[in-house]
Amino acid sequence: MGTQIVIGAQWGDEGKGKIVDERAAEADLVVRYQGGSNAGHTVVVDGTKYVLHLIPSGVLQSNTVCLIGPGMVVNLRELLEEIEELEKLGIDHRQRLKIARRAHVLFPFHQAADRAKEQRRGSARIGTTGKGIGPAYVDRVSRTGLRICDLDDRLRLEDHCLARLEAFGLESGARAQDSAKQIAAEYYDYYQQLKGLLVYSPEFLQTAEKQGKQILFEGAQGAMLDLDFGTYPFVTSSHPTVGGAGIGSGFPAAKIQTVTGIVKAYTTRVGEGPFPAELVGETGDLLRKQGGEYGATTGRARRCGWLDIPQLNFSVMLNGFTELVLTKLDVLSGHSEIGVVTGYLSGGEPLAAYPATVGELEAVDVELETVPGWDADISDCSQFDQLPRAAQDYVRFIEKKVGVPISCISVGPGRKQLIKL
Ligand code: GDP
Ligand code: IMO
Ligand code: MG
Image (cartoon, rainbow, N blue to C red; front, top):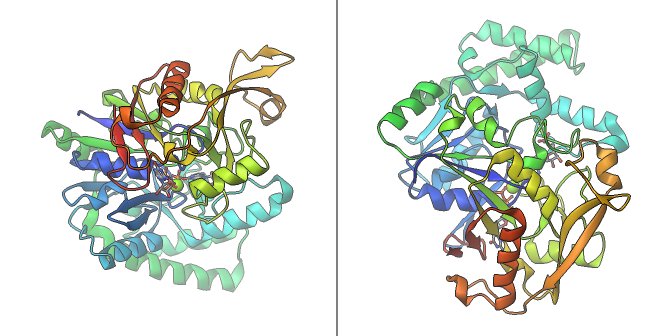
């Protein structure tokens, strides 16, 4: 198997959680390397649905060690809640959960700042998850953040909270001092609860590699939400793309052998921002209904559209996918025709590059092709040749257009609903 990574190839929610869970059965270690609780990764095991936000989706495999990597911004309150929730559901994982000492701490003031900023943006809002991700990464990049390993100094923690509450313009004077005391006490307590789980990520991963352990990196969000290469500014504040894994873990990205892009059989996006393949109206509503396209973190309705080949080709360029997993193919059953965006045009000419600005992307004319659909329910298929001919053709059509082999097809949320090719 070797070292591998699973990355969302679109705008997130491609079904990464399900695929990571499946692959984790053979991985010794699953590592999240970016993002925070903006992620919502769903895994369905024997009819029970688990939604992971901070803990890697490998946690449901009883022998897999899970690392919250140094590139993440971690809301410790939510982490402890997630730990407890899993325990209540009978998932014994405390011995298997590790947290990188260098991971940044996401505080309540980051969340308050995220929400306040979105309100100020008004109609120009990004549509963030409201989880504080942007402000936490701002603190990291501005070198004004605190990492988990910095929480052992309570006075420093309190001073820090006061300074940040004031700097974000949230509170001042005696009120800010009271809040800072309270947050510092709370977070110092969280640190005491979690410090037994801390590791030095680079050494931890190097040791695992030397011992021949199988390492699996789990991306959150998707390539089109990448801070640099996504639809800026309608992006998240981290790097879901393959390069993010090295920076966000301390493990050399060049050693990753298998780069798997998770591709939903159509496209969804939650939050604001350009979406060339979007279907506004009946077909989009139908995809949302059939696919249960509501956010796993915020419950928001996801915007839906057909598969977008130029977008996928750009994602392949950014990540160098060695294989793709196609998810939610079952959702397309019942459409007599399936649309696919196969080109972006400007003034009738194909674009030379994927647009860098929102204006350009919103102005593209999309080239839409249709392929025959199928009626049969495919959620019980376990072999490629059990799929209706039209579904097989759709898979081959995507492979051809994107130029990367599809190694696996997901035909339902359950662990076993997979077709390996
Ligand atoms: P992630 O963020 O990429 O892990 O994806 P989410 O969990 O946010 O969203 C994917 C949703 O689709 C979840 O509700 C999954 O249970 C569900 N899902 C995953 N794969 C399939 C599939 O092949 N078919 C269907 N119908 N649902 C799926
Ligand atoms: P998973 O890991 C889909 C989107 C938000 C918003 C933008 C910025 O489940 O695929 P943020 O809170 O990160 O500052 O919001 O990014 N977004 C996601 N969309 N899936 C996700 O995660 C997302 N995480 C963030 O909706 O548009
Ligand atoms: Mg999700």
